Length: 167
Image (cartoon, rainbow, N blue to C red):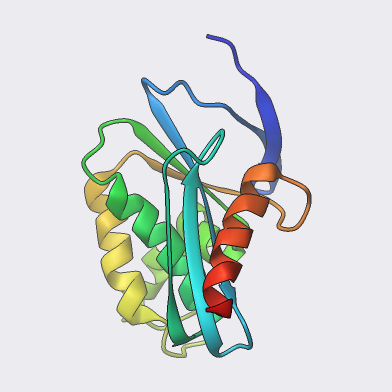
């Protein structure tokens, strides 16, 4: 298999090359959320690497950036929930990525959906079913990519998400 490196993502605070996937075994999906004002009109988007051939996007008239980031990843996982291949979600949201890479969700559940400051977890209405979906599906990996850094796929999903904040 030929591996083509297109960008660096952060996994456990270390840069890891994000490559064009072997479509027989892996799907790499970039996700992003956007909000015009926070709160305000929001948009979310996801697209498959390396070219965005499969994608989806949507929006809400009143939302927050964090909710849109979750919705982008949620909709990507939901789209591929029955696909047996490894699913790699690449996001510029540390909020979404660290929930899974650092196991934040385990602490939230153990503390009765309280964060480390003992406050109610924001966006629990989204997190709870999303975490269940990721765990039920299995074989999902989350990677971080620096936003607005010239990564073509991150830029694509950013444009898609922002478009929903304008309509």
